[in-house]
Length: 233
Image (tube, rainbow, N blue to C red; front, side):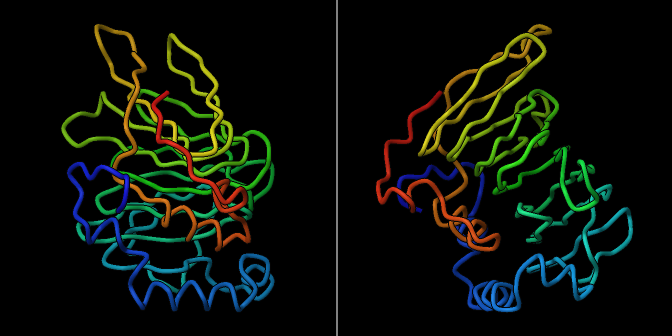
């Protein structure tokens, strides 16, 4: 994990993309035509499921399909990688989120993270957001990492890994534009939510590159061939 700080996450959890099984699953997904082919052939959009997860309260199986409107939850030592439309998602262990419908059944308008963490890559589109208890991020086509810290549900972490994101709290609004990691903490303090600079923690460049490849995209640093500094907001 070069240049990334690991905070309360194991190397095994962060280096998931190096597993042979994961690489094989991703290669198969791309070779079979990705999202469009899966939709046309009525196949699952789950690229990989490790461990236990639930879909709307019932056990999730690899052959099922994650749709907008669903609620997902992963258990300990579990993870879930799936694709909807031109967006891809990696849900970390002990996470709970809802995937809300956008302009069509196959477009995500809101990813509502309730607990845990998710890495996501979003293609261009309108009216897409990620929300936590303290922060809402308007997505314009980007890669991001979002985490809610256990026992600190009034504290969220958000990294705009590349692209443009509109950050909104109950008393603040800012726009983040970057080609290489710009992060904030969103803390509840005395009834207000305060945004403060943060380091790049608990995610890697390789994770973003992996997820981008699933939806036939490249990260900003892959396109430019240059990695910048992980500056805070």
